[in-house]
Image (cartoon, rainbow, N blue to C red; front, side, top):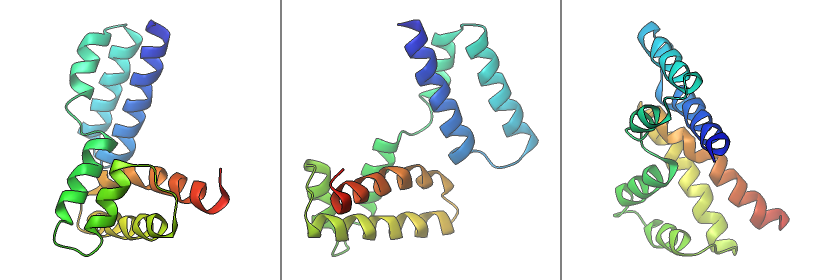
Length: 129
């Protein structure tokens, strides 16, 4: 159990570094301190810190709510409720990717965490994998 938990926490640390940190010294030292906690097996303390950062699921929900007044909202809402794999879902995913790019352009780099998930879903629809 501990090995799996450590791997999951390491994955979250990598996400945090990639999507929530700029190249500032204090943020680099924050990542080093998270890795130190992981190495020291202080997993509960590390989990508390990691849990303060939004997950891809929470960012996905937040972005969809931001798009409530847009025409794509119904399609995106449908995507969250099921794993639809039709042309409408495909268009919605591309639109969602565009809105992620807009959020990143406006300084919300953390929304980039959604892009690999969106691309994976697009690939499943297009290639059936």
